[in-house]
Length: 117
Image (tube, rainbow, N blue to C red; front, side):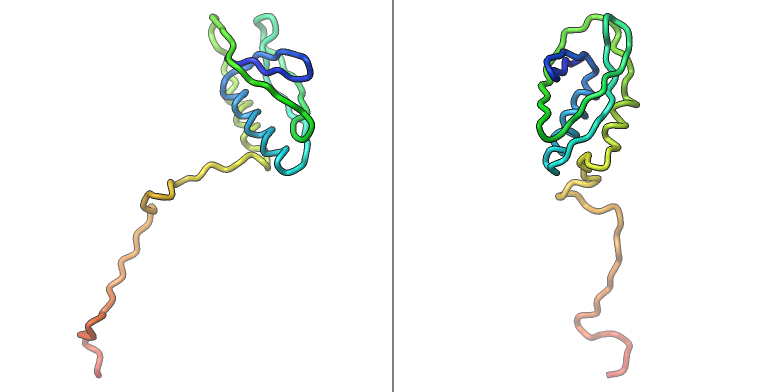
């Protein structure tokens, strides 16, 4: 679990939501924009939601939060943040890896084909 400091408030949410929020907030700010998002939080042990404005001029601080109970499943909410139009895409394939496709090419460089000369 992580704690999100925003506008003088302390909001408790899951690691995946907090990490996605920070990544999205940075991407939105980089574009010189701001946007409103909703994140799931825990308040007094129960699940709730908070609305935040992220982007230019809105500071977030995210840090660890000790939590002894079962962690709620907020993966769907994290996926919504990651589906935002400005959320950075992660590469599907590493630059050093081989592509998933292969093309066979047989070049006749010594001119020994059966074509007439």
